[in-house]
Structure formats: structure tokens, C-alpha cells
Length: 64
Length: 233
Image 1: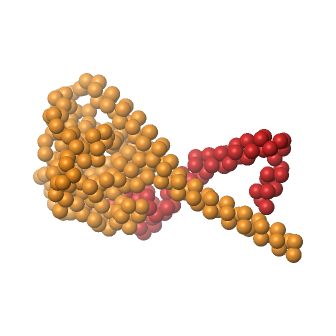
Image 2: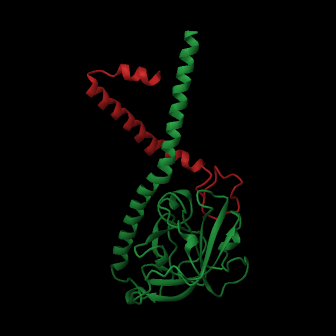
Image 3: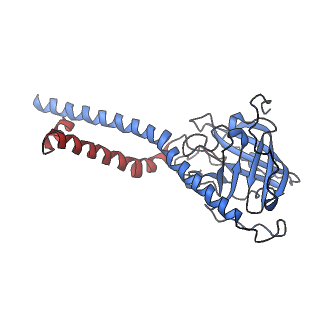
């Protein structure tokens, strides 16, 4: 429904719509890859490689 | 009825979107971080190589090593077991940002080749995964640490799997905190098991010899070892 509404909102003939949709998808992926995911990654529990007295205690806020 | 169907449709779309975003995140973490980190780390190794080649400011051994600023690269690690082309930068510090740009040197541990413990940490998975194959290291495998003044050649002695809080592995005498060091050790830590951070895979190596940078490494030092060697005890 959401996607159908976006599709209907896209102007122009089919080719233009497909191109516009592709651009939108790429833009969303780019935003996620460049800004969102790098900020989420430190909250993930599988990226620590150091020994540290505080390891595992407050794993999501400490520095590795 | 119409409203219920509409709401259900929107919720369905959002759930599908969430699923796609999660899949994208896995792809980003497992693939894209390697792409970008490898590019950064390769560039750092090239820059260091050029920098090291630019003549010696002082005679090796006559200068007290200066403290390295956090986040700056000061050495290149080569591990023949990880491949003939394997070369990774070592940066000062072990914070999250630093480990995304290479191998991190534990603050407060000695510099390569010195008496004490040159302790480093690296990613086992993601962000270029410099220590991905740490579990393939065998007793006697060589680890070469190149700095501007020297090549320090370490040989693997043993490995341990410890809890993330077991900081004694980076003590000046590994596993013996408080003891005054007389030997030259290197400790490598990485997460264990792969794709988890429940434990740490730790490898201990001891200095074999230090060669002045101007003399270079003896031929054959970087030869990839045969896979049949004995496993580190």
C-alpha cells in the first residue's frame, strides 16, 4: 500500500517511473550505508576485539 | 472495515521494510565495511611504506621512541601465514574508531621490539578483518613488525581463549601482571568465536630478532609457511 502509493505518485511514462524508483531506492540505501548503519554498528554486540576490565559490563557505551 | 484493511496494509509494508533494512544492515556490516576499511588500510600501508623509505633521521637504537599520538599509524604488520601480500597498519590506541582503520596498539604497552609486551587488537570479522585467520597461526609462525627504524620479527609461541575481561594477557609479562619484564613479547587479541564477541582469541609471540630498517629483512622471512606445521599449543 505504501509502495503502491509511492508508485502512483511517480510522474511520467513507465520508463521514467522505473528510473525514478531506482534513484529513490539507491538514495535510501546510500543514506543507510553512509549515515545510519555506521551509527548503529557500535551498539551491536559482535564488534569488540580488545581485552578490557569493563568488557561486557556496559558494552554498548564503552569504548572498545 | 476499510480502516482496518488500510491499517493492516501499512503495518505489513512497514514490516517488509524493516526486514529489508535488517538484511541491508547485515550486508553492510559483513561486506561493505570490509570494502571501505580495506581501502583505507591499504592506503595507510602505502603511505607508511613511503614514509619509512625516506631515509633515517637517526641511527636506530640511539633515539628514545617518542609517544605516538592516538589514532596515528606508526607500524606495518606482516604475517606470512595470512598470505604473501598481507600487510596491515598499526595505529596507536584501541578505540572503536581506531580499530576500523587498522590494528590497534594497546595504550601503555611497549613499542615493537622493546622489553615488555607489544600488545595489539584487531577485528576478526568486518572492517577489513585484519585478524580473521588468527586461529590458523601455528607455533613458530613469524610476525614481522616494520617501523621507521627497524623490523621486529616475532615467532608465535602459544594461544589462549579468554574472557573479554582477562586483561592480564596484555601485561608486560603476558598472564603475569605485576612481574617485571625481561623478555620481549607481542600479544594479539581478536574476538572469538567469529561473528561473536563472547570471548577473545589471544596469540602470544616472542621476539626472535630485530633488524635495522636500513639493512632490510633477510631473504625468506616473508615466505608463506606450509600448512602442515604444528598447531600452537
